[in-house]
Image (tube, rainbow, N blue to C red; front, side):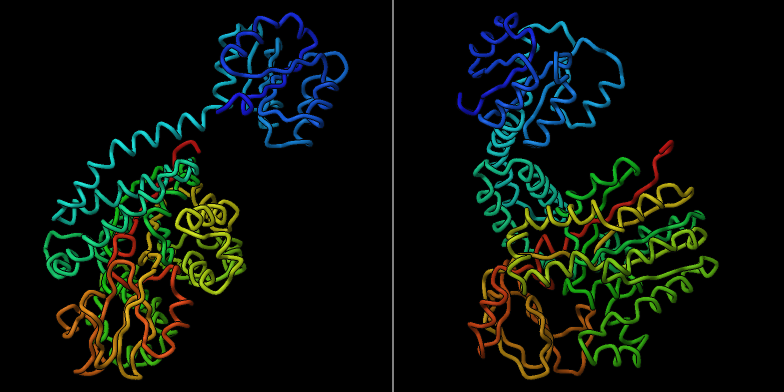
Length: 522
């Protein structure tokens, strides 16, 4: 920060007596302008440029609080440190309510003033510099982990480390290291994608393996129901691990949060992973058990999740939880969410309240179609920020606050799959029955380059459904997306740089699960 970035306005009716303090600040690189009154301070702000205001609370004419109000009206972003002899709590409350940057009680010495100014003006830069230094120190070690990782647990640890850096960099937008971190994400996905293609079935079949989509209810929901607790089960369609880490802070004041993960089934898409969550079954099992219903669902790609309520009710029956009253909601709009919120009192005795919340997924889909939304969330950081801004003012946060007042209630939040920004088109071919997915496709006679992703010629081996004996699947890796040769350029332009799901990547497969318990004494 240069001297011109350290300009301070100091308003005190005894400013002449504070010369030693001013000299001390100027020796440390600050430029200080002193004025004798609140009126002078307001005039100085209208005519000059300052980065911080030191404000005496007791002055002739406009007092400190009146001056503070005027400053906020002129420039709400200008930080103010109030200095006062008055230790009464009401004054401190008024000052804090006005969003002051600091509060000092007289007498103050030059070192106190200096530290307060440094904290107000340099805190963000110092933290950013420290974050950059720590990341550069960790960079080589993280790169080595990516090169050497051979187990799923190692990849989960790597992904946690990468997403933790994502969240930290969100607080410091000007470090110049975002591209380096993005490149680590890309390299990690290249290596993880190859390993996951080779080991997916081993992970899926392992008796003590990771939790997959179809095991979420057994692992994270049923134990609470068995204990007689009420469960609010939220499935946030397309929520990624990094996005959950960004938004969880908004819930920490009311809930103790235990974080975990599960793996989304392949393809990492709603018809496969979310049906598995609500049924407790793999897709091929569902096709056998519900043959007629499955054929009806599969006639259109828009109806492939139309039986979630039925699947969940049957799961409760198989699990001998018929005495657990259940409600299920699929919430596509804010109006639908507010209607559920308004009726929460009616669901106080509902043992399992299950909700699918589609906002995150809808945001990704509309981003691909709207230049306005694209401006708001140009990248992963913008996506995280937009989700947090939505949640902070949403019906969902109000619902969680309501539930936090309920006794013997647990909230479980998870997702069906994540998403990844794609930028590498891969030409594929298939017949007219081929599905429309961008990161995965199924149909007859599908062909794609080997580098494009995983080809599954025998769906039954992957517990995937088939329409006939010729059905096969292709699933994209890395940041690839599939495009047919016809109208190639039009579809590349449409999908390049968009967030998609259905493929093999850390972002799509490693999915957050959070168990929230209301804090006592809230």
